[in-house]
Image 1: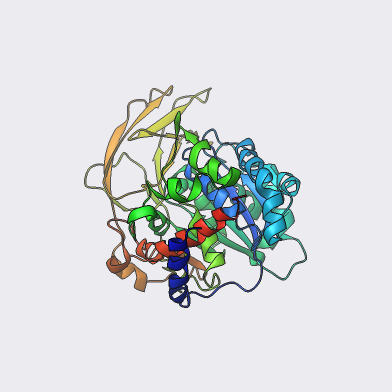
Image 2: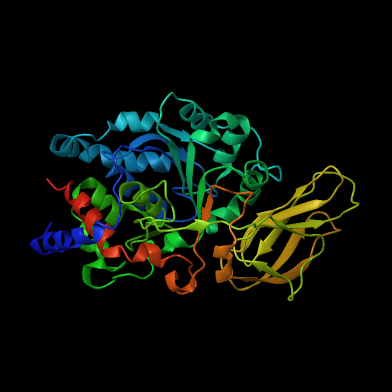
Length: 426
């Protein structure tokens, strides 16, 4: 690390006093869609492995929507393996790469359907196995992709619920696993969970973006040339045919809360953000196509139900929501069910394409609006352990509720990450 960065890091230590640091190694399972619909999970996996000496990684589950698979996690572990000897010799505590490979399993690759659960996967079984271990520490499940494997695990083994502490990076991820999320809401309201739909964006939106701390400058300044992991971060992550050199790491706040924060108190300041108790947000069911004057709170789960008398056959249907394909399922009575979750506040239009003539071509529209600031004062008695973004406008970065509770620490958490990347230098 350069002298300037060292000085900056030392100067920022005083600011860290406000944030409690964990005193024991947290048990961690990461459920990720790495290699799927975005590249930030691959960046966050680098961040995770460079902190593998301060957290106890018990599982890496590939839980994608889209093309991501366990092999993408192995790609990051392969880069880690080339730096491992140096990291272990200098600092100790870094797990063997083969151990991490054995902990990497494939989870669900498709939505569980309207029920929110289906058949066990290797990923859900691994969550159950870890949850049942005789260990007094809670098991942190950091969900960076679909929440289907977690829902399946809890369905199959509800006895693990008291041990679980979930940090769900929701937002776009929530829309891909809306039925599984809704299952947890319906059947397991006492689940301990942080639902970060917008707060996580403070990792790459707002804060100090000057000089080498910018999203476009940090990677070249602090990752490139810093061992195999640093070079992978800077040059090896491809998405949609292009190498990604812009810092995002949108899932890293879930780990950062365990490193610099009091994870048992989500309402306290931490690098992962500060949250409020969730209010009642049961799914909204529309039994006819919505129109322009229909309004839903952003991030609320919506179900559209359309009746059909077409005889059951090999029928298929997809709801296209501004380019996002939401597959439909048909129940025993012949009705079609479509699930979606608006990830931002705006007007939405949709159209259905189906081999069922009764619903093919159905179209509609609605608006999603941000939660009112007063919602923070309406904690639900039904969800005593459910936390979510603070709608207070003073801690928002633009439209992103709660994001300032992360972005305020940008210099601190990036300086610490730069220091970790320095560990890989020969």
